[in-house]
Image (tube, rainbow, N blue to C red):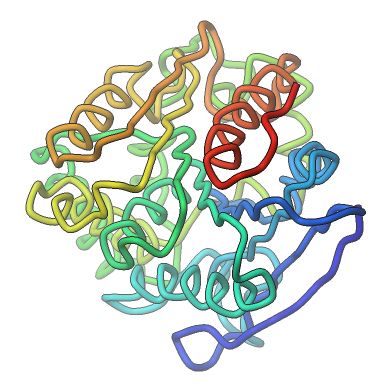
Length: 317
């Protein structure tokens, strides 16, 4: 595997977006584009990239606006921008797909989003239908409209109170504190991300993980979550694009499976012809980092391989 860094200008017209490309040693059979979650960065997915590149699948992704190395000089961290900036992040995904895709125009291209990245990927499927060969939605969920509306009102109020580039303890507690309640008594504020205390400790020790997002980012993310739950928007997706949902059955982002099932059914109702779902018993939010991650990696690879075989690639053994 070889790793290459690159950059491109964000659709906000001022931020340099940092990207990473992992290439297999031999021919590229497919490309998986990653969209990471909130308060993390793309290099956390290098173990997954190593697994896939060993099997001939290139992996590419970028740090989202305000995350990792995609922060303009003097700009606040964990802030996308003013109202409407959710779409800047989605457009950046499309820019990467277009620019890197020109280097491999004839191989299948898959979009994989984790957590907030899954909401971005779902927005991408609506805005740019038919531009990927398939999508994998990991650690996603589906909130009820009333909860979304309430969250948006609180985020907007707190943005006015403390400033949209600043975080709010109230908003953070309402979001992540609620996730952790399921696992009380709590050892840390992030017990909800993993069964393994070591994984939680590594997350907390990473200086680019675990920061409180800005109120402006929460406002934009909740707008995006509202956008992707509207049936009229879902019907704009390409019904022939296969979709796989993967989540831990104890992931609070997906309401311990209930929200994942709601999202899955919404895709079916929207007419998506090939939609699959797998929930992993006992696993929490970061299923790619658990002790059984090789099983999760293999499930992902077997699903991808179905579509490589349809493209004329030999079926893996």
